[in-house]
Image (cartoon, rainbow, N blue to C red; front, side, top):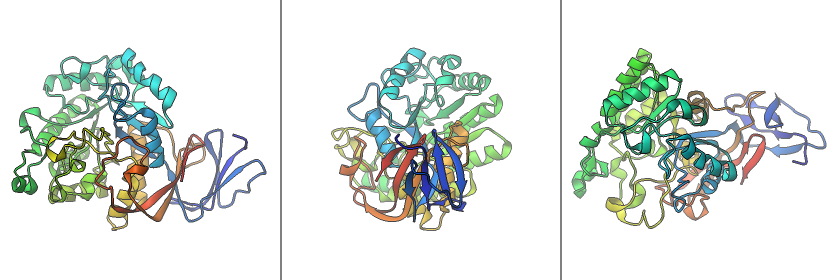
Length: 420
């Protein structure tokens, strides 16, 4: 390093107030109102900035191995650092699918070589993510964040019961993309007013909440830790709320776009196409209530980069998925915090603290914690230009918009990994 400690001076620790932080050997070693730096310390001025535990995104697509033309682990993790993240959990939509120890190693080797921050891979729930044969959870559990067939809902009830029963034996987490295939209509947007006006087929809400209902019942029987990916419907919010009240080990995430936009914001452009789709104003209101009352545990971006060619075919024919790592904090700060819906402290809980708790990830803002820290300029306004993204994916509904709130610095294990 060339210096003994990093001293973050003059910042305001979220939820605490003005305090300096000293970092050594990758950990926070001191916090006080005034830390005097030594000659061989690096001093980082945080005057006017908010200091917080860095963000964790439990739902990203880094596309390697298999689809490096969409995103690489090197580019995706640099995008994450730019967005204030020091841990991301990489989904298993890969080739080879991480469904065996050998296939998982193919991904881990690239992570070890190229990642700029911590990447925790998911393993699949079923072999090939085909829903037909359960993976060996016992052999995979220690090397992964959780188990998911993301992009595919596990259709057979008995298979999900087997998965949850086995996961419960090993205290492993099942994270589910919930979608009942027989309820899909070959659509791609919500069955709402926009779809009706524009002659589109849609993805009905029950395709999500119907499977959530089934999975919660199985989780309640088996005692499995169960996490619902990217929830988007009012029915899902209520199912999770009631399950938590009964003591079911269920958690869930939603994305910034579901909290900010509705199906009436849609345009005939691929940047509005994702799965699940944007839904009604009623669904959005229920999601907002869920982040306010704690029903929704965390914000996850579902960062899903595609090539420009794959996203150049309009709303109907383009691939599903948008990027989000580099705009998530600013979008939430602009549209949710600045509008008084939740506090900045609550946003940090949603983007940092709660995902660490649920997925058992190190880091924090207290003495002894791993030094994963973000410095935030909550008043800085900036214009979203995808040409400046570190991600290979350039498609976002925030492109061309003005947002407030910028990441000034990201520190991972005591090392500066991004500095504006």
